[in-house]
Length: 456
Image (cartoon, rainbow, N blue to C red; front, side, top):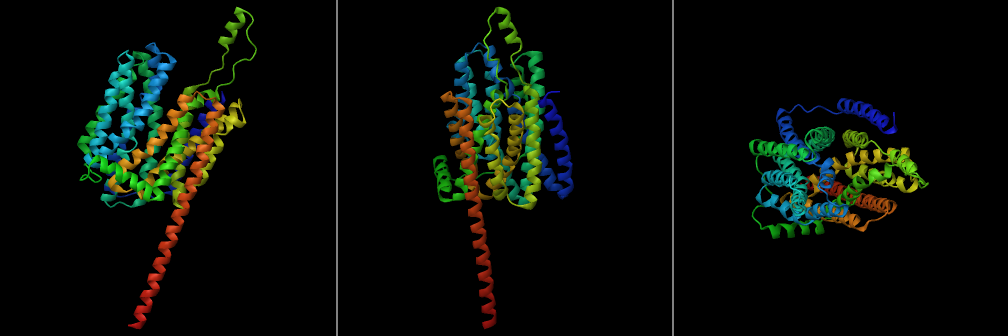
């Protein structure tokens, strides 16, 4: 049994233990209305994520099967991130004015159209698909959360329950990712590389139908123009350091995470034999013994690690706030991505470090969603969230275009994550000062009231 498969089994056992322990330590929610609300959101959200996950494993393989060169494929990938950075920001801001539910439906339409373009062996048609997909991705990571936060607050549910929904969403997302990978592989084997995109299109159509039938509409400030909404979002980021910190933390961490997605395979692949072949037989032996890694087992291990992180979020949230515990989490994530630099070629150490990084990812997502729910202004929530994605996508595009060495790339990620740790500590410091100020104001107000009562 290789270390990757063994690690997957150990993680599954640990995840199951932690899941049941978490359930025993957290109070069950008995509110039937809240349970129905959570279920309604989770079904739609997980279908939306399934539509995304079904496409991921075979995008590169499909382009290669069409005879695209490596350079052309790189351009297509850069176009996807670029459209998410530019077009997605504008389209995502439509959510605040024209409705978050409508924006979620638009996500399904755009991503579904991107799936259709995969049937055409034409670079420019595929380019359109990447532009549509990149725009849809921006909506996926803003409109759904914006709709949830507004509806949760509108219905008067406890603010702590919002963190539970985000934790369950990350847990479910990991399960969906593993399942989607298996389903995509099955259909690709049976019907070719384009088949998973047809399955994704079907799932996205189902998601749109459920949104129409089960979700009410909500808005940010629908009385202002899109341009004004974007100006207000910029002003909110400039005037509130908490929002600014959140944006910088998200961009630095998720930028590093997306780069990690592109680089974990070469980091875990053992080096090829150094000695050059001298004969044709030597060349054949070298090709037959070229080191490979079980991508499926590793990916499944990463997803289970994220599930472990989502369970840890529940436990930590009972003891302290995300503003506090995310400081060591971000610092640990920086240490994990330093292992390919410090221990190059050491497969075991790097693999364990990458698993820990994915646990940090599982903690990061619900924590960031919870903090955004507290600090990002409601009237421009989706717009602000899409502004956060501009530097994120810029980081990924910049690194993709530079053709840097792997050690340099991971060094950049480490620097980004250390900076994210610094901004997280700044956010925590601001929160502590504000809490102290509120406490002093309350105490002073109470003293003044006592003095007035005595005088009267």
